[in-house]
Every structure is written in C-alpha cells, then in structure tokens.
Image (cartoon, rainbow, N blue to C red):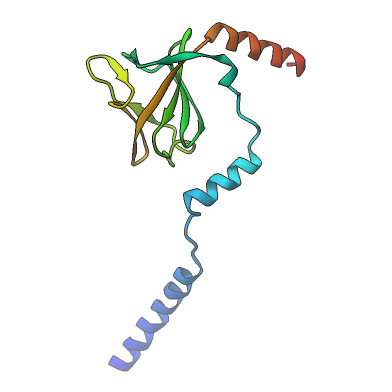
Length: 149
C-alpha cells in the first residue's frame, strides 16, 4: 500500500516540477528599459524650456509628474509651476511606477538633501531647474495643431 501512495505522490509532484521548469522570470529592469525605449514614442523635450537652476522649491503637494528617463523627471507643484529634476543616481523603477514621492524638509525640496522615491529606489536630487510652463503649454498646443489634433 505504501508503494502505491508513493507512486501517487510522485505522479502529483512531477507535473508541478515540470510546470515550474517552464515558468520564466520577468525581464531585468535594464533589459525592459531598453525594450520600452525602442518601442515608445519620443518623450516631450523639456530642455528648451529650462529657465535656470534653483537650489529648492516650495512643495505642499504634487500636482503631476512626468518620468523622462531613470535620472530625469519633471514635477509640477501646480499647473503653472514645474521643475526638471536631475537625480544623482539612476532610479530604475521611475519609468515603470505609477507612484512617486518626494522628500521635503520644512516644506521645501532641496538639492543635495531631498530625494525622489520610486518603487524601492530612493534617489537623491542632484539638480533642480525651473521650467517655463507658459511656453510648454504653447509648444504642446502648436504640436497638437500641427498633428491635426
């Protein structure tokens, strides 16, 4: 009887082992980043709209944000005030996460002190640059009009 039970256990375990052997792991973030960069359309170029570096900005809540790549993102503290942040290290989760947080001290986000938190990454802010929100809106309207939208 015990021989029959051990054969039944073996028959139950074998399909599970075979199934696990066929399972694949998700791609490494670096390879996924390369694949998505090849397939994704070009992101909006904020560089022409930079109006100078600042040491900090006041922050009470985040209006919106846009991930450019693993070391750059744009944060909007309201519809007319945006900043281009350069991080001192890659924040690999940034392009894939739907949630991003900023640290702040005394209501200010400051270069060299505060960080961007995305996924499990905490990435220090290396540079903060003020953006010309009005010019960005006009450029987006012009691009939309030119594309027929």
